[in-house]
Image 1 (cartoon, each protein chain N blue to C red):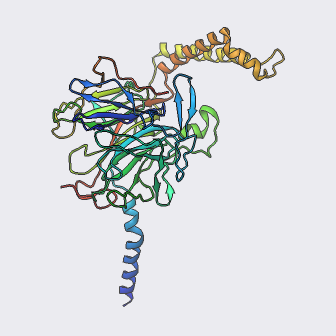
Image 2 (cartoon, rainbow over the protein chains, first blue to last red):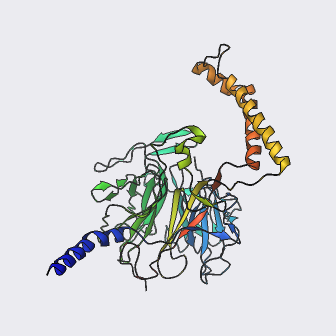
Amino acid sequence: MKITWKLAVAFGWMIFFVLPVQAQHPSFEKPVFLKQGDAPLNESGDMMYPSPIIIDIDNDGVDEMVVGTIFGGLYSLEDQNKGKGEPKWNSPKPMKTTDGELIALNNW
Amino acid sequence: MTPQLVDLDADGYQDMVMATFEGTAFVLSGSEKGWTPPKHIKDKNGDNVRISMYYDMEKDDYSSVDRSTDEYKSNPDHHMTSIALVDWDEDGDLDLLLGAYEGALYLCMNEGTQSKPIFSDKNQRVFAGDQQATIKGGLATPRIADWNGDGLFDILCGGAEGGVYLYQNVGEKGKPKFDESKTLVSVPLPDKNAEDDGDSGSYYESLFVPAIDGQPTRPGKSFHIEVVDYDKDGDLDLLVGAQSYFKPEKVELAKKDKEKLEKLRFEMAKTMDEMQAFFVDEEGNPKPEKELNEVFESKEFEEISKKYSEIYLEVQSLEPDQGEANYIWIYRNKAKSKSSPTGNQTID
């Protein structure tokens, strides 16, 4: 009887405290930086304060990475793996508009 | 300035939308030939969509507008730096979720249609629980995703001090309602109570992330996030663009470089003494502020500052005392298609 009572208390504690804590604490692997070959992607720092998104910008069915920078520029990176498995990124290329100008947004 | 790809005007071409530190939002309209030059996103009066504060490029100074409603008061100092588009009220058009540098989230509703968007000239505040949604540390960079797979969009945000936060939608379609923020990724914050003693104080030291083999082990600050199944294993991962300061590995210098470094350090100290002499009078007392302004504008001071910078850069090239990385990181979700880190995401 005592054992049952203790188990109930233990499981009750698990339900009310342990499970919510686990739900709030995500389970991610340790972060790793993306690479280009053996070097970190953007090792030069040209894409300062990078803001990346993964999208298919040219409608070829393969996602590219587009990266915004603090200077108001945009870069695109092609996936060498063509969407098969994890991406392998080519070098960043500054994006241009239809008039051939580099994209540069007012930033301040 | 995290961009987002959406068909803003329903013309069949994807458009690129983003906001910048100007405090405004831009659209690069997609076309058959590519992206047209950027244009500001305007409200129904033809004014730029903003939160409150913005940088007036013509006046070369900050300015502010009041876009409050009777119900939702805008903070005049809140400054838009990010934007995300979502059909907030499920009426078939895209509305604007605005992220402020100060951490707040605002909503600018589309009063038009899918093909003819007309954005309100007023902004509402976004609430989480019974509080105004605010990212601690500022720089709210919202992204929209159905994080827990319940069919409702959720808001995920990066922030200036690092970390990723989830505002889970506990409302219903067309009537979103958000829970208090949950921390998906936390990073140790710089110790604001630590001794701030320049480059040697413990506060300065707390700004650095740990490094291994001369590389940072994690993103540091200014998190700009993307929510995506990066490794294509069926669950949502977090891609994080961020800046990290770290201590580079010490490299043993050749004798010749060691001697050069010693001379440079001596020269740097001497130049610093010369610079400091500009700030005091003949008796060694600090000059008044008015005279200091003249010092800063003088050609002599400009020249000696330039000399100091050149020596400093040369010293750094031989023995850097800090590294700066602007890397893109992946936080892989361990769930592998079973559930999201917070619970019940299922992706078929």
